[in-house]
Length: 349
Image 1 (tube, rainbow, N blue to C red):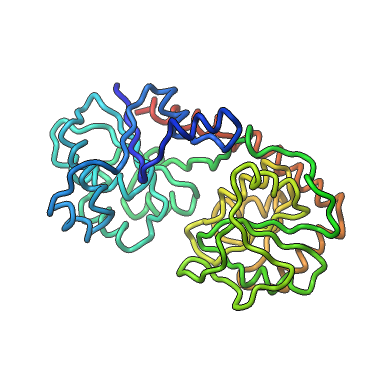
Image 2: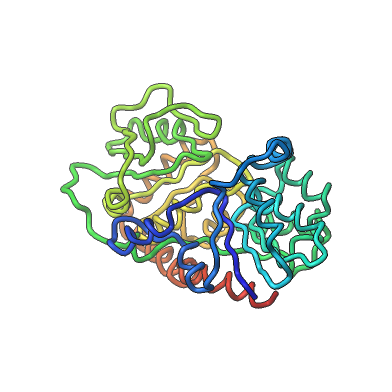
């Protein structure tokens, strides 16, 4: 069996690996996976884009992703296993390979199965017959896929989240703090308005790893940034140190079933910091129920403020929670475990 990894977006994986070896940034898990499998990696760039690709992009994905799918579908056979890292590359390839008699084995990560375009394409082209294994990151999404496409239990796998525990590590603060630091990060589905309202009257510094506040469809920003809150881009080593400097990490989210914020959650747990996170269906809710992180209601600054104060005012409780999170992450959510789980599922095919 020949292995192939198809990326949703172009990355300089070799350059990322060089920087990771120099501890300048975290590893890219797809580089390590491709090296272990001896897989060929494909990226959506450099392929001629046809008029048909542009037309099909109105259905789903981007023209460059359809161009890559066309090229691959003409080359792949039943001797190939293809891992697509997102539905935006996986669904076009599954559609085109569905017409092949000797089609490859397809494994597709689907992170938003409930979105209208995704579920429409899945059903319209009967992709439950073309995709051999669906991977997703929550039980809620897995159950949706099984029910919507009438799939058996083994056809959908819940893939654990991961982070590079060699880069995001516990450690001491790099500065003498005059007051506690609340750290936050990310742009996707973030609710920094609620975080600002929750902390504007507290004697804390709120440091957010993000670009300057610019309202977008996926990020809610405060109209006026409080004096104790700042938004900065950080390079990777500074970002890792931000977690270590933090007394509490707050992952503040808009409510959705997409399960945003899990990357930041893994990074904070790997840094052994206590975490406050907005309740959303999926892994975050499960970890809240296990007492690994503290959950707060969406769009509720009072609830968030009380959760932050409880951890700040009870340092031993905060440390115990951080330790539980760290132990769980090291057991179930390392990059190495993530890769092992993927390869194990491939072997079953």
